[in-house]
Length: 317
Image 1 (spheres, rainbow, N blue to C red):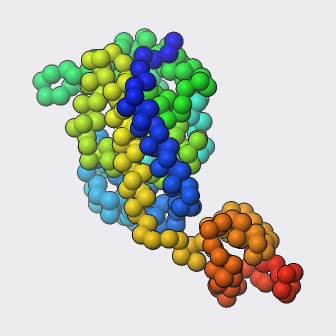
Image 2 (image 1 turned 45 degrees about the vertical axis):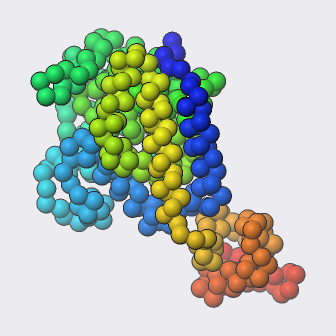
Image 3 (image 1 turned 120 degrees about the vertical axis):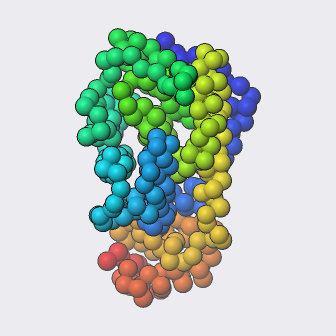
């Protein structure tokens, strides 16, 4: 059974905007971010996702943990961070369309934090704000069936992955399949789904924007609950993705430098190349710029030059 939602004009406009910005990211070669930028965005993602759940560690403390340095802080918060680091480091090993992978990810994420990590809950669950119950999840006996149905929906090919990722995020939050860790699993799995089609989104810290708009995030979930469908939440999450891509596009001031182009090209897996090959990869640069780039690569001993004139080739060292 397909989860209930409606594709509105607003959703279609947001899908178009996100797709256009992903194209701009790819054209800017931001899919090959510098390792320092990838690391920073990964830290921001982990910090934001856990902060939403009440983790008190700072970005500096999370950075220290990643760098294998000792950190003073609540043991539970440190364990949450180390678990999240393990999950995000293994992100490409999880199959987003597999319920088995889903449970394995939860086991890693919640190991040492709850007794039944990697298992669906066996009792009732709800979300309490103050003295009021804001969401009463389906009964525990229904969880396995509901989750299997949700994964069947993911495998349907007629819906856009951008939309399916938002639907899964909402429906998983609604089902609330685990005793704890549902929020971070919903956000993690949406990321995992998105990077199947858009690899650059692996290092897009859209969870930072969710954290900044935490009240609106929970309002979007609540509104969709009341409407009995995920339409409102889909629009909210697509807007978050669109705004996050805007931030990513503004992080680079100006065009790529020569050294940046060289490193991006070498990371493409090429073993030997000519200046023409290099220019075909970066179609907007001039022959003079290409010559300067490969000369820089030679002088920095990244490649070795062989031959002369039109027979010149460059081999990766």
